[in-house]
Length: 454
Ligand code: ADP
Image 1: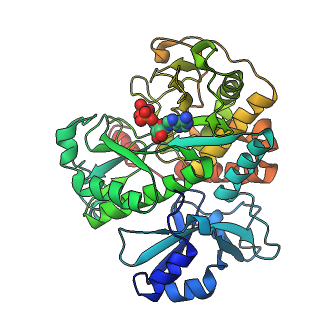
Image 2: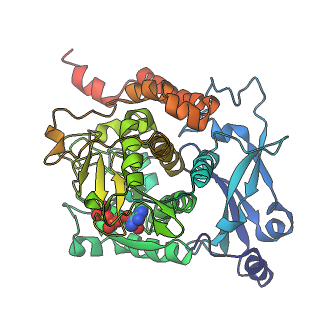
């Protein structure tokens, strides 16, 4: 159910006054929604065809700095416009906001009307098209984990981020009693998203105080990334309506479990799962084995797209369910790649490396590119690693820091061939900037550790 609103139906709702506002938004490099709110009458009359935005929106950071060093745009080039072109298949109601609908936009060059290659939706569409050439459709699901805090975003900010008390007092993994106390946020989240055309499967408590997981039914990769983006936005907005901060920071405290975004993947042909072969070992088709071999081989090269900030790397710790090793294993939550649904038509691979801060378009695109390479080169899958993978001696590690992930991304011939040099260079610059800013800033940790004792 991608979107849930036809243009004709929107026009009726606008005419009878039920919708007065249409949000037109693009997913930015950080996976956030950026755009404008239209008066609905103006939207249905003209803006539905295209609107515009400053092109720094795909060259900025979380704090909206005008970051220097991007080839795509700069002060030098005058920070001109991009065209935002609504993808009308994503048109949906936003049931948690009064009288509001939303549409996601593609980002085009102002003059040529070509898609901007580093726009996250374009990056993913390119890999989906490559798979289509091979005769396959990618079906994916990205889990969303996050923390709900007692206070609102504004209260937390005003306390200098010191007043961080999760909404619950203990580990609530699968805990019905504790999660009942969080229903003021979670019930409207599930129901409003469902009504907005997002096929919610369930929510559940996770393995830390105040931590929830939201699961959306798998679907075509672009719908999956769109759904993830809208759902993450809704979680923050509905949390805000209830006076609670909902945070997707992967590691808000070093002693607490982190939040991830596991990515489930399968390739389909003619309406059925092409990873399933009932006669093969573990029912894994040769295609699946090749795809997984690529996924595993190139994991260090695309780790940046699963962990794009300094904080992302604080999550990768032994014994926390966040993986550190690039191996696969059957239904084993200590491995980077977990085989799920073996012996059934639901067979799929779950990549467990990604943090809750990943951009789903880029994360899925990078993994599809790695899998495609595995298929093209008929790569052989190594045997699985069993037991506690944290202790596996021979297994390769993912990069341990943003700096290391940035270097492997920069050197990735696979991603350069799949995405294009300009796109890889663009995201290497994004990584560099995050590192430069962190290197420049003096942290609370350094002050507390050294102020007197150094
Ligand atoms: P977990 O134990 O990791 O929470 P779940 O059974 O909840 O696993 O499934 C996680 C996700 O996997 C769900 O979003 C589901 O829709 C998705 N999924 C199920 N089958 C497939 C498939 N064939 N391809 C991709 N994702 C799938």
